[in-house]
Length: 325
Ligand code: BTN
Image (cartoon, rainbow, N blue to C red; front, side, top):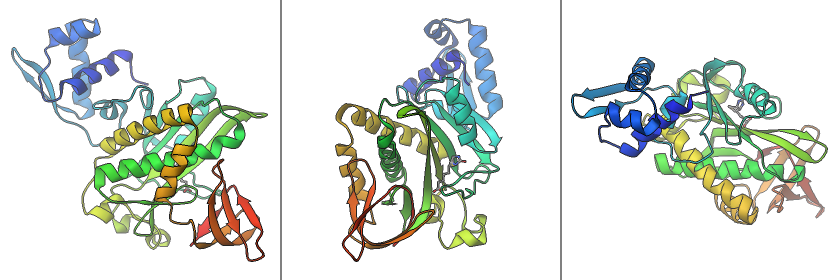
């Protein structure tokens, strides 16, 4: 995790925008020596940041790295608790695994584990999640809401809305949500969300929300079996997208929605979610681990569970499934 001093330094540059900050000013602001400031600036430079140091004016960060390190994300981050604590690793098996460990060690709510590559990324229904190096966003967010277990699916839907809003703001694309948590652009999947719980009886300890976003992959970067179904923001826009900027934007939307959710409940989130949902009102096929249910998707319950009316008029409540439209 980053030191508090490093966070304060990056916050100062965030607030300064294009302006220069002198070593003296930074040292006083943060309450450390000018040598300590210089040491941190040197570390940022080694990490890949391009700095400008002008005599009598001070420092300015002119170009950031292309990795998604904690420092890279923190520069420009304006949230108050989502993503304020970042655990970054270049390559991991799965960010979910690390997030589970950190959650049981009692890290603060809003802590995020981010990697530039996952060797065994985990998808829903025991599938793998293809997570090649430097191209996507592979992250797990740790939440500790005081809600009963039955309401946990609501947070998956809330996450999908936050990611859609982030993608919309950064790329101008209008994504759609396929229940519960696939985010599609032009019918192809660009994002998957995997929600896992640490709970005891009906009490939630932590919710670990894994988010995988295909950002800068080219068509040929996807394995053949995925090329038909998956896409990336680069493929859809023709532009390379800054992953750090998208992450910051998603954190911001997430924090707003989550705060609203804790204050006002699921209703306002449900409305937003429905506005992006593609499956509602359509005849769909839902494959659960044990069953296939075919019928009209009526909508979601106030808990976030999908309602499907089959031919006999029976309404099924589906908690987890793959949907075919
Ligand atoms: C899905 O199957 O649609 C869900 C995919 C979730 C992938 C993300 S990537 C970050 C986090 N770490 C993992 O191992 N999986 C999730």
